[in-house]
Image (tube, rainbow, N blue to C red; front, side):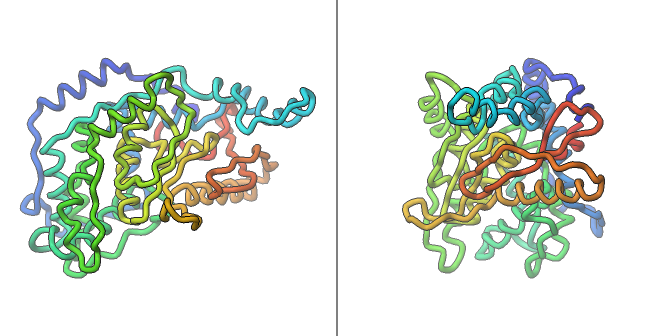
Length: 374
């Protein structure tokens, strides 16, 4: 944590210059003919996340901003612990999240803004990546959805999502797909030209699967950005949460991530939710990995028009992972458990959660291991 906070903040003007320079450079899209045969790598859970964070540090700075939001300062933490007692003395209801904690924790700088810009090169890279899954032919066949789900699982494993702790099984006729993806997939192209690429690709394959009759009609990102500007035109509150009842691949949530650090999306299609989660890792880290003290962030599987309780596809896994790691650390190091004020995340995570205190700095409380970002 100490090393993380000592990293100098890259000026936004420098990032603009870097993006402009890289966009002028020629880009070579890899395909199957460029692959190294019989390549072997031991891909570990989360291997791709540090690469993502480092590339983003040069282009947008969103992951650095996310990491700074994860650490609650010692002064704010003490004040938060005292909130129930202060509320009793002042004869008022306790605040779930005192304004003082927000003011002391959030960076002074606004959320780094992403400028959405489509690129045919980035889309071609993604298409070539998916084409590398089958050993022969292209991915846009009747097995297109199976190939897409395999890629999403592979990528989320690489990003270290706790719901995807092992490499997915390669589909029939796709032996060696993992190593082909390893050589062809280039997330830097998607980061250099941010866009809802999966939202552009999926309508073309919606009829490519038997018994899949539901159409998919995504909101163009340019329209989503306009809607976000209309919603947040008066005053931007970074701690405000929003709700998207039919999020699809997450276009509206991506646009709103320029203004808010938390939001909840829901959809009836599990594959679309995985697509949204994949793109959140690329462009909106606070929607991919919730800011633990802020809450109100998740992706829910279920019908927004029904009374049935939806299923968490994201936040529940992170909070279970954090809770388990803290429990193990307390046992191994024989330290006193720390009591955290109750955090409720859309009825997905209830009860008290225990944060980590980094012994190196002693100044921040967090539930997330930030060593990969230092």
